[in-house]
Image 1 (tube, rainbow, N blue to C red):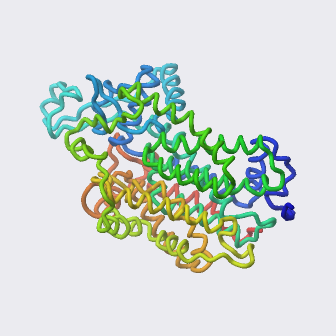
Image 2: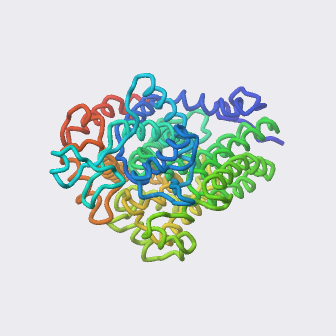
Image 3: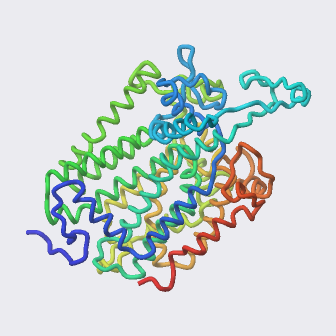
Length: 530
């Protein structure tokens, strides 16, 4: 006997659920009918577009593979290898050593960028040497990038930054913002007529994840961590949010479509970051527990094409389906560290403490609001009244999954030989776990709203400052006081991280003024919320 359906809930939306589109349509309708969601989405889109990241090694490596695929129909990056130290060398050719998912997604925007450049005669991304010896400049005898001397700097043309910006907006920022919408619905739950408090809670959790954690910095950069985070949380959210509709009107066709979609998202998560393979296996097992083995099997089928694509790329680039770029790392200092088990040993408790609480890379130091998120997950108890439960749509097993994914990434990061991530904004290898930790913010918002707001504001300030400087905080010093703040007051350098404010000619802290002004105009927590 089916449970009665509450009017106005997701399950009561008049759709027969016979296709995947019919299954997802209620989610879009529910999101669009919430007050202030459109204003918040616009402000978030502007925020992520506001920052222009630097041409750093990790990002350049991914862009180099994208350029090779688009411009040369190849996977070798010989023509651009000088722009990155994150590279592999095999059979006389250089390759990106990164998982290919972000680069593959970037081929569409980059192909359009190349087309525009060829039609208008504009420059493609390029780099030149700024020599330390001034006589070379006077004699117009600049060396080639490959022949630069110690102390010489590489200077990138504006097209390099434009290409990086376009690629990460499409491949990282947009998936992140879409995942933020699904997180909003997940926290909002299945209440038929959400109250103002429920809407504010859902909005707060989504905004805090997107603006007050390292999700902001890595959502504004061409890395794989944040894309993986978006894909993992979107998969879990879709499984939970579609449950009411399928419970009301079971449809094998819709269930098959959902499984293939979720499997595709999970498959691409592994394409973006190899370390997502374990959380993906955890999610598939969780799907079997929560929704049954049939959906879990369709999920596995949905991920199979992307596993074959990854194996094909490995065969093409590295000579074997299980060979990766990390088997052929070029720089000796990296190759030595990854020689055994790709640099992964046993989790180190002392390192884990530094990853959470240290002032160098500590997650809770940079984003103290996540302390309340961890507390919220640990202390959450299901309320007798579902409408008063901040996580009413989630079962105990769902939170066990969230905790398990967080524990996996913490343990993995603490076991990695380069646990600090090199030039990094916080513990970057833990970024895919952050939306799962952020679920606990729903509890914190209900129980300690002012503490959550104050710590959220401080966390957001940290993230904005570091994102404006670029997420590659150096491997020394305090990332706020020794890096982000000095960079904010420093003169703008061509070819480095910048913001829309600096491009408009605003100096120092004034460069952040357009961002603050827009949020003031579009602030979603107005007193007139229905």
